[in-house]
Length: 212
Ligand code: DC
Image (cartoon, rainbow, N blue to C red; front, side, top):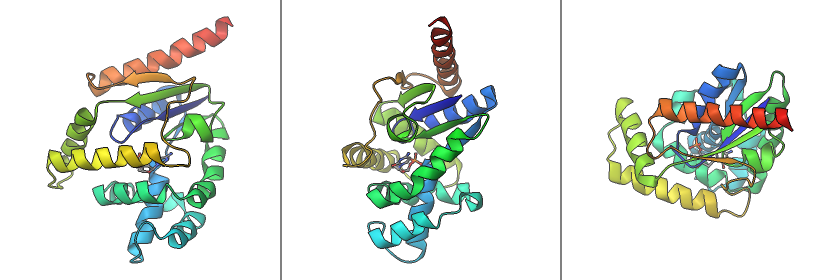
């Protein structure tokens, strides 16, 4: 089974993806980490994130086995990841890895921005997870503070709005709900409610398929 989860920053898609994978015994790939790793590699060499040549070279030489997830989750990396992810050749260099990951038995849960639309258009279940920008900013702010990073909610909200705009407005593989994706709005849900709702979607989709 392949489950595709898409949605904007801090919508809850990463946690939902991880929990669905554990629940169904599938592998999990947070595809945002790929773009974050490209961005970090570019920044580490002193180049700006919109340096296409540096970003393409980084994407082509990426080694996901060596990712330091904690370092990649830093706020500045998310912003830079959004910039490098708008470069078509960067996206092209990362497609095979994601599709092979999805196709490897027993299947996988992938979360990102273009999983249901581009990477796995034939996924068994597609979920588009969203929440209001304010709810997402509050969650992200809490996470940063728990990790010891002092950053106020207004800055986090501005960052989220800027990223939403860039990720949905870009020419290539923009963030959008696939026509056959189930919408899961987590604005008023705590995380355990959201996970239960996601499991319900998977179960309903499987049951519907069985009857057909
Ligand atoms: O999900 P995240 O916040 O870790 O993603 C960081 C950035 O990477 C996001 O702003 C856009 C980009 N991204 C993408 O373009 N496509 C994906 N499948 C995943 C992430």
